Length: 429
Ligand code: HAM
Image (cartoon, rainbow, N blue to C red; front, side):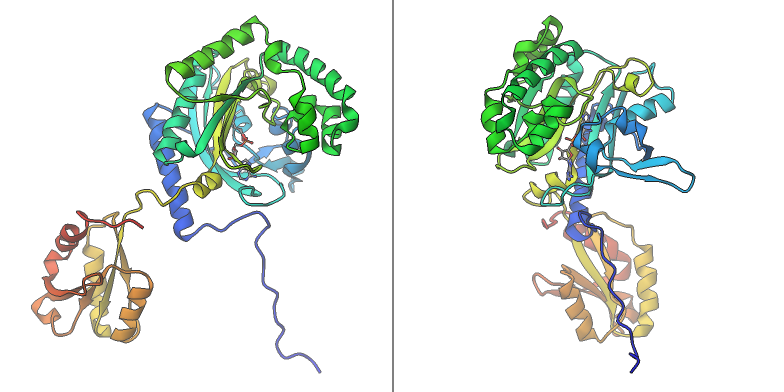
């Protein structure tokens, strides 16, 4: 027998992506707002680059051995045979934007916010679509700029109340020359110890020995701890640069740990590398990370520009914020005792000056009892009732849900009444 109704299969979300709503999106917006304020106060300007970029923007900058380029990019040919990617990070895209918009002669201080895409194994704190806030300072080779972007990070993390939960780790990767010499010495050392390395590290050793230092595998760690230190391979210029950085941090009384194994996973870094990591022992513990990338713009076909910056994962920041900071608002429900009064109610609500700290919620259907139940369910703090007995004398009833008290208000005073009642004494959610 033929089935009368076919049950349609539910559509699914893409693994490692999230729908943002409710408190989550409020928290994201709050993080964005705090970030925006700190960056603007350091005279950084906002930039928004496209999510779609040509593949070579990332292959020419991040390095073919990086996890992102070798296995994590969402890469496809579009209908016109253009080889495109969903951007996995913002730095290379901003370097491209500087070339495209002929901004190479200027000092560029940019900040950005937006979704990034990496096909990683999804887990807590590791998504396939996540959001980053970031800053990029291009056009200056001076270590003061490294300090300036770190100062922005410090102010931002403190504003969110997470600075005390993280440690700043720093390292120097030296200039290109120092790094080349170090790379070759590290390679020799790792080849001698190859038989004890994990399979992943053996693979990494073939393409980029530095990446072996990223491994958290206990087997690899035994070898890594005995490996040569990059600090011993820094030439005079690189040593001076790093000394100026650490002296600068000491001068600002910014606490940090030196971590000689911090190499970052992307090829474009030189000199400064840093990460703010949570004190928890898990692999997704970097909240904010960055460094210097002199020469990145040149590798993309532009001038030989210096640059330094960082990015922070908004989802990871959100996981570490105890409560929603400063999301203070009141929910006020408006409803009437009979349907005819809804017209007047809408007119009244439309005429009110909107206040960011109170949320108006109109309830238009159901019995009076049901309207009260709905108001309670959405967590209202009180309600304004348009009643058929009060309306002829141009009045409405105010019911306060926390005290249970009720009072009559003149219609032309509604806005003033709510302001006096709530804007002095808003609650935390
Ligand atoms: P990154 O270390 O790849 O650096 O990412 C920066 C931050 O983005 C991480 O510390 C983390 O908080 C967050 N993040 C990275 N991948 C994921 C993921 N799969 N899920 C959730 N959060 C993630 C960069 O992207 C460089 N562009 C940073 C930079 C800017 N360097 C210089 N300027």
